[in-house]
Length: 225
Ligand code: HEM
Image (cartoon, rainbow, N blue to C red; front, side):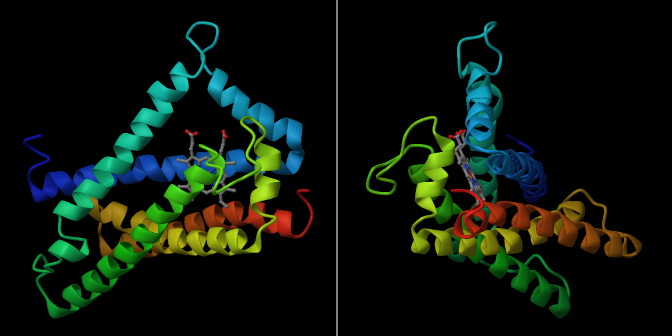
């Protein structure tokens, strides 16, 4: 807590929670692609996540203890650190930067992270209501465990397709800058390293976003039906 109270500590906390969140999006994007194998495969995959650790541990305990709770904690730390570091509207200061050029770059970056982060967060609230909690006003056909048909139904509504695609664009801006600035936070910011950083951030982002978008687009084009 002592380290977290300092700006440097918060930057580390942002980087560590950011890596956990990036790890989650990779895992989630790849998992979603099971939908292209068919209903049985994606539904069994989801069931497999809930059954992890059985029969040694009660059903869903491993999922909660090792995935959901750490993931929720990573989201909470990431948002709290962003807020208290002054990356959000209410506390935006921009006094951390030495030269006017650094200031402009940092300002562009923090503005990008602010709007994209807010959209991803709002999307997440809808997304959980839609495909995890199955709140009837959001997804009237939701059936627990039937991931395939839940996806088919949700993407049979074009405004929802637009919402998901738009959210993935916001996610692209967010993780592109996140993957780039991650190295800065851990002190690896040698200019000679920057080309690699840029290529890494762009390639990583393209793979994640194309992978996520494949599911709504696959439904629109009737591959998932
Ligand atoms: C087009 C993009 C996406 C699709 C098709 C999709 C699909 C799904 C589906 C089907 C589930 C329910 C899985 C189950 O019942 O086991 C789910 C859960 C979830 N998704 Fe997504 N997702 C997408 C993007 C995202 C993004 C960008 C994020 C985060 C930024 C995200 C975060 C989550 C979370 C936190 C859960 C709950 C996991 C749990 O049950 O513990 N998803 N998603």
